[in-house]
Image 1 (cartoon, rainbow, N blue to C red):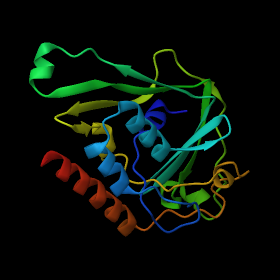
Image 2: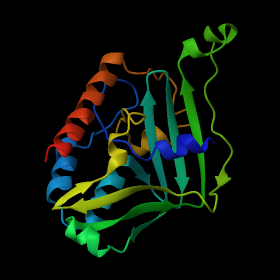
Image 3: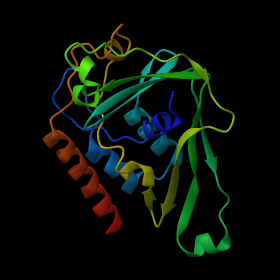
Length: 211
């Protein structure tokens, strides 16, 4: 599995779009409100994890769509930790109240990736094969899934929430992600859906910078 895919799948804000793989969608306003009002680092981290993942028993799934591809990543038996960083006197003078990292460890991971027909060789476009899961791989000892968190003057900053590579995610059910062929009958959203999702992320980022 591509490590970049595994990392980028963990910093996604959910947005509603039409299509075959879709369930209930977490609310962007509720996450935005938590960034402004939630004083507890652990509660905020839990909310971000629950927005990013679908939990099915002892397995967590993350899903991301981009204009020409989509990827589903499965993490086996994850454990979560919050790792604070000791604040300096200068940090406190600058209004920083908490700084650290939320991270996830796991036993093993695998992924399955869908590619738009136009990205395939011409000979494969008419009858493309269904994507298949990669082999399970153990977590590299140097590799962690996670995100940085800082609370300054009562407001949280989580930079990865606004990365351009994490454009959009649909909220899936366990039935969706554990299907034998998760991408059977799947179609990527229209470009307008990606545009709307990016606009929502940009608005949150803009509002964040102006508070």
